[in-house]
Each structure stands twice: as structure tokens, then as C-alpha cells.
Image (cartoon, rainbow, N blue to C red; front, side, top):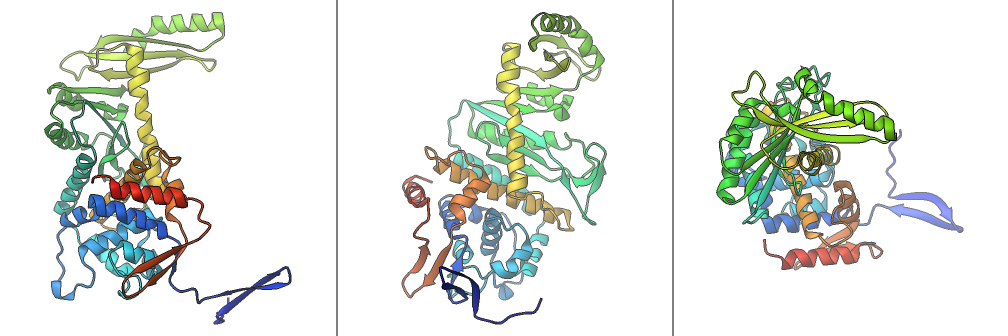
Length: 445
């Protein structure tokens, strides 16, 4: 296509009037609502805390962009939907992002370029990332003040397809793809992420799970000594080491999916026959529950198994969970274990709407850093929802929040005394925006 250098663009006329666009609008952004994220960051010191976790090995005399500015630039860009470092080629000039990163929109130099951001991601060590992981848990503790009665930990793994020659990318037989295998932990009640650990692609779901669980529970018990901690997970985490650890401490409970085997099916055969008979008599789906003591060959002691026997028009369906809870079997299954499925929605939101699967660096540690950055960006949206309680967007997904509150067109001007952000007069959520800002300013950090 031939390059045109005209300052004016002529469109089809409207009512016999010319429609002309020019390139003289000044500093205009499509992301003025991102200043809300800056308010959240200022209040909770999210980026500042992350920056203190990292070691800067660069020559101090040659640094143009300090760690805090780089963290802010990368974190807010991800939150706004720009997950690729290549976006910095033009995004480094964006006036709203410059304000968010702590720079003046017009008088300050541009933000970091793509090569600078890529070098930044690739310079971090395993110790840096461990401290950053601890910082994520510290943010959880800060935003969840005690005392607390019950804490629910939902652990799950997910697949992250890889492309190219990324370190520790391997083929996984279950997913049938080359991938990484991240391990994620969320608060089962409100969806706040507590841990995000990147693992090689060929690892089992439970690989490293016990170490992560021990680290989390140690800090949680110190912060909330009176709380009962409930661990939930699917059958991929049904390993004796986790049972033994959780059973060995007070105020720890678990409900974990259990893989079906012939011994379990034999135990529930009479209940299945009963469900099938009732279905044939009524034509309606039957759901029956029972519990019994069971000891696998690899176990040193018997444990409680809860069984759900279901008979719909498609035929028999049986599910099992192992638990140290003593409550009614149906209550444990329907009102405790099944709620674990919400963690899959949180993972989906993290991957699809915050692009946490954009782990395209060659170095494995650089990709672990990216996973943590995307997870921290998710925390900003969690905080945004927290301050939207009582409004129509209190439970909105990331994409909805981004579209309605962050993607706001504005003209930005910098004078000697002020920075003006001129929003569109017809912005439909102006009252919600004003109320949210007032809420942020009034509430304690």
C-alpha cells in the first residue's frame, strides 16, 4: 500500500457536509480509565512492593528507567490488554500510561522500549521470583485482614501451550500438546490468587503441590491462628503426601477428588442398583450419596470416601472424593466440593482476559516472571471489584471492567501546574467512575 502523508483524511460526506479527520487532536489516549488502576496501586503499593522484591543488576549510571517504572509500565499495560512487549513500540508514548507509570505525559521522555522490557524480564533470578511470589501472598494478607474463621484454598493446574524452543517446554500426554503446566492457588471464597507457579510441561498435576501448600499454610496459620483452613482440589492432587500433611496438623481439612477404581465401584454397586431401580420407576434422574472407610494399598491408614451415585437418562455416573470432614455426605459433596469448580472460572479469566498464557520468552524464569506479572495484574481487577461492591459491576468479568471503566477516550494536556484529562462529555459511566474514585479516596488502605 502506498504511504500517504496528508494531514487530513476525507470520509464520505454526511448531509452534504464534508467529514474530515485530522491528526492535530493533541495527546489523546484510549485508556484514560487506567488512572483508576493507578489509584489502586497508590493505595495498596502493589507495584512498589513488587519492585522491592527484585534485584537490579544494571549499571546505576546508565539506567534511564528504574525498576519501579518498568514494573508499572508492564503491569498496567497487561491490565489494559497489551500483553505483548512489542506493544511498547507505540505504547511508550501513550500519555495515560506515562501518568500511570509515574511520568509526566508530555514533558517526560518516553517509557521503556521493547528491548529494554525484554532485557528486564530476562535478568531476574530464581531468588527474585521467590521473593515476588512471597509478595503476592503478602498482598493477600494485606487485603484480607483478620481474624477469620474459615479459609478455603482451591488448587488447580492448567495447560499453557508453547511454541518454539522455550526452556522446559515438553509434550504432555494428557493434553496432547507441547506446553507448560502452571500450578495456581486461589482463595475459594473470593477468588484472590495466592500462588502462581510455572512448571515444566511434562510434570504431573501434583508436582510441587505439597511444597507450595506448606509455604502458604505456614504463613496463613501465623496470620490467622484461629482459622480453619480447608483445602480443595481435583483428583490430580489425590496423593498420600498431601493427606498426611493435612491430617498431621490441627484445624486443617481437605476435600479432594478421587479416581474411580473397581474396589470403589464394588462398594457402591448396591446403591447404583437402587438408583437405577428408582429411575426406571419414576423416569426422573436419581442422585444418591453414601460414605465409607477405604484404604488404598499405598495408604498407611483408612480414610473416608464420599460417593455420589447418579442415574440420569444417559446412564450411570459415579464420582468419589476423599476427605477428613465428618459432615453429611451430600452436604460435603454438593455444598463444599462442587464449589471448587469456580476456580476454573478464575483460571479461565486469568488466561483468556489477562493473557496469562502469553509465556513466549525463551528462558523459563522469564516466563515464570511473566506469569506472576499477569497474576498481579489480575489482583488489580480483584481490588477494583472489591471497591465496586454494591454497584452493577461488582461481579463483572475483567473484559467488562476494562471496556466500561478503563477504555475511556480522553485528551490529556500538561500545564505548568496541572495535568488535565479531558474525558468525553457523553461517557455513560461518569457517575460510577466518580463514585468509585470517591470510594478509593475515602476507604483505608
